[in-house]
Length: 425
Image (cartoon, rainbow, N blue to C red; front, side, top):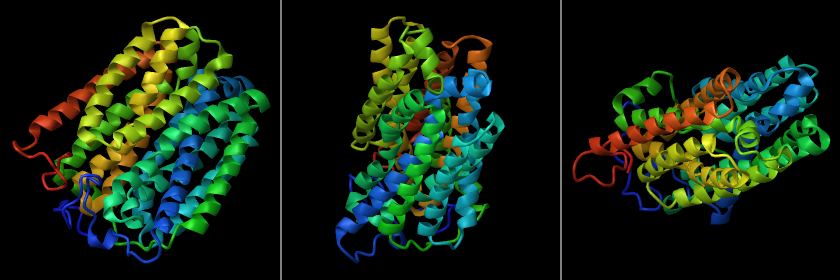
């Protein structure tokens, strides 16, 4: 892998579907049938699904966990803040620390750690023990995502990298479709401990899939801590992507962490229907993920941030179950395109430094989850539930402005931006 100090041109002219040109050492060798690459992609997607389900599981369980362990909703929100904060720091730490280790081994260790952490949380006698387990979840999420985010270029041929990346990151909204609602439902039927135990068991299933389906993935180069700030300094597109990641994800989780009290207090929706509505939110999110995969990262993020500004503003003030339901579904559709678009933004801006760029994005993504959950909790505890989505809407507006500013700073006449100018297409 070439130096991260400058992204450099792609090794070949990338096709319109991939939006990125993978350096030769990152491309699949072509050995073996094509379906093996796609089964490996599916195994990585399952791992992402398990990790995001684990990270966001408390969103639907804040009230029962808080009631059982004697803490407020705002304090219970630390179950989202803590792993997000840890994951943000661990993304670059694991990327650098993994060094010369096979990426397959790294992913298997991290997914196994996540499973064990959730089983420990299910048995926790106090909230402090739950938070300790959530620290381990944060290590797993940050490390796994940073390593896995750029693996599509090593698993499938270049013309299919775009689809494979969308499939890997399809695990993010699918976690909202199946993981969080199913966890919420399990919490309602068998208690919140059952939900954590189920996610722990699912982690063991993902570990098995990775062991069986993922090929050996030896490192392609040594990443050092010095290369990460060098990439930020030299690549304006990566810098802009990191800023947009912070604004969009902080705004999202300031509101989404407290979606349950928002739906109950503002929209007047009965608690019994929350898990069903979160399922609808997740279905819309999956659709948004794959719709985003068909469009440019820049255009998608501009549209998403503008739409979420409006949606979060309205859901904070419009009463009624019909309005709340419609806005929640629109919210899921819009936010579903964020993860894959941010990943593509980074791969386009730094095609020769995919792992380093991904680790920076993942670090900021997870730090932003922590910041959003923390700031949203302060808003909810200090003011009221509607303050959280209103704060989120303000950050989405700033994100839209940042994406727009990035677009007008691109060189006139440049429309591809595939790593050559340091800006996304």
